Length: 310
Length: 315
Image (cartoon, each protein chain N blue to C red):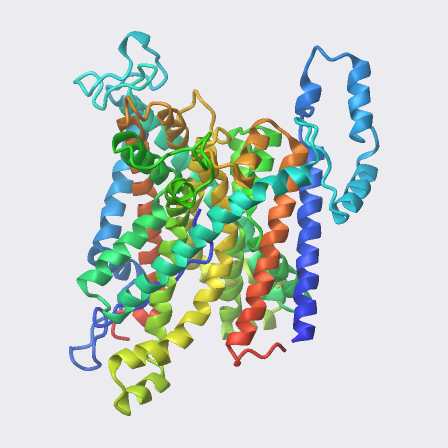
């Protein structure tokens, strides 16, 4: 459950500082190039990107892989060690662990992505409204945002899933309704930054309406920040979902998710500790990948850290 | 200052009002009946009696008004499962949660801040890189998973520390016994906040290093240790205090999972049990109670902030 307000990593000194005139002036790099260079330098993020690509391919190709069904119970073959038939062995019900990890990954990553996108949409909308209109609208929205930030929303989340049942839809809605505050603050800042620029004034002079200015002029400028917020948001949402599922209040069995696989593993810590290890590693690697990728995109966007000589 | 304080209190009250309203209407909007009324063997008369007893037969808006008035008086209603008043249930379990929470906060401060300072003192050194890797891992790791791993290692395999509960049953209270139960859940609860505080301290420190007054401190020949110990520390740690305040909701929210995992008899595990048993009044009451506590502590931090940093002039 990471805080929506994440610390900025300070510029690593020396890594990017190119003294003026020390080299022949290079052509201005595109954002994608800057991103790729930074990705190459940050081995952790590079590893994360590779992990996410691998995970996505595996999840998408899962039906084509020669894997046993993740829900097929085989009581005669519980806690089996790794074998050619079950690459990571079987769990307490004789189900194939690898197949369950892949199926669980699909659920966890899908919930994470959907909720993160929804979070950014809700937060983004409020942030744009606050930043664009300023004044009373801004004050009301931002006070509200700060207020919600200062309460332990996890308890609200518990209440919502307990009362409405923990279906995937309820989960996604509840997660995004309790996590939009970070993106709202971010977007407000972005809009304040670009609001006073000439193109906004020009659009106003041409008679563009509020909605048009907000969505066709201001929003595209803030798009990169939205991508960062989404990437980091996916990691956060995945952690919360895993926690809820672990408590039995998230994705409910028999649908496997990394979180609810850990619930079951608790009862076999003595006999089969390996069951507690795999799903956790999956969560750790995926959240780390989304977080570090978010950091790299943010660094690539920060003009102070850009290595291009312009 | 007084004006600022009144404003903050006003905002806090409004937020609390919103929290209360939201939770109340969430419960009213929830499909299905409350747990005790879902029992099909109950006769309609019994159901009606129970509904009257808890005021469930009145129109929602009336229930809402009544309920708000009660909450303000400190009456959070009765547990729908146990029939006990909610506030004493919370207060019974408060000391355990406070003990766990404060220990975790202590670990966060005692490990997180020095680690951040060390990282910033020698930026890009192998030590800095190792610490920053640890913080990335700490922020990406589900803390309950770390808890499971530590229980497997220290309780199951090595048998050094107990992995569940708050004290050895049948033994008189002793500090050592309590500490042995406290260590694992507190460390686990503190992981992500420690990682975060470390990151913030590092970046805050590195920002202050480049300020003019630090350069002049150096140029007048102050030893490096004095520059860091005096000039940088004071200014770098102020923003860290705010982040510490912001991490309180997370610490409390995290306690729900960690208390459940370690069977720690606090408010968090109570809320989880209530959520599983659909005990609406208890979840509601806990949410409100915890919100009041966190908002109040943030107010205190705000005021402290103003006392430490004279640059802050409350409009």
